[in-house]
Amino acid sequence: MTTLAPAPTAHVTRRTVVASPPTAVFAVLTDPREHAALDGSGLVERLADGPDRLTGGATFTMRMRGYTTVNTVVEYVPDALVAWRHTGRHVWRWELAAVPGGTEVRGTFDYSAKRGRRLVELMGFPRRAGRALDGTLAVLQQRFA
Image (cartoon, rainbow, N blue to C red):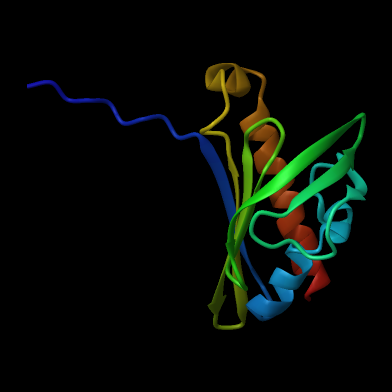
């Protein structure tokens, strides 16, 4: 009998609890004008084009440090989930759940759809994405403290 090895993980997830209800946190995450202030990577400069509020299927363009990227909302559940696919095929996902004292916020960098995943890993993108998620979660905690 042959046993298959488990598929390698192609995502990085971080979580924290924020002292605010899911509706308030979701409102900030779905306002693309807020993304630069929330960004833990230091790469997001500003919204270049897009709606005031992200909803399912919305497209928005962000001015990044040195480049511009187009993103499309690919997952959307009001007050619980928003995820957008970046031009580079990876997905940034934000999941919210009410917990005692506020909201558990789970941020995920999902690169399972990227071509050359091994190269992505060798270039350190998952490690940097983890640091960016940590930074964004810290900003959210401070904003709602």
